[in-house]
Image 1 (tube, rainbow, N blue to C red):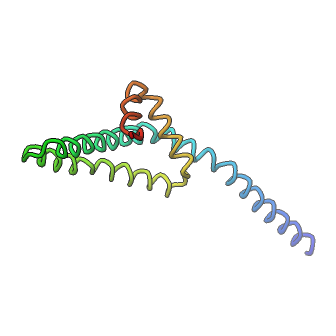
Image 2 (image 1 turned 120 degrees about the horizontal axis):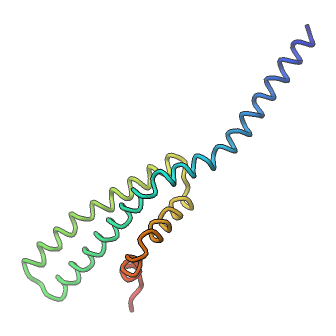
Image 3 (image 1 turned 45 degrees about the horizontal axis):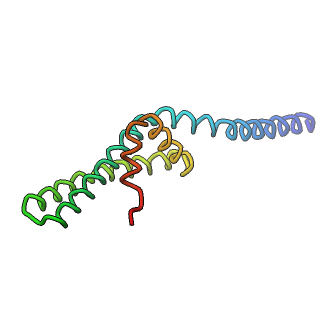
Length: 131
């Protein structure tokens, strides 16, 4: 009787250890699957937000240099377009909630930049610090 109890305990412990090892091994596979599954959508949202920020910056500068009703309306439209950044941010938060960390999301951003290398110059010019 004691032998059956020990054997059952050993099987139980082995099951727990196997589950722990499997869950540790599955985490990188889960992250890789998420990145490959959502990289394109994340890239599109990244560039949509970046474009909206660029248009908002240009509309703000245009209004500062040349105040007019048309430029005020242009700025209002650019502000509405910033909703793209909310979509980007919500998607980023969803990816983090699903198990990606900041490094994984950064990697996805780099993949988006690499995939759209022709737009890289535009992205750099928007984010560079000007004196």
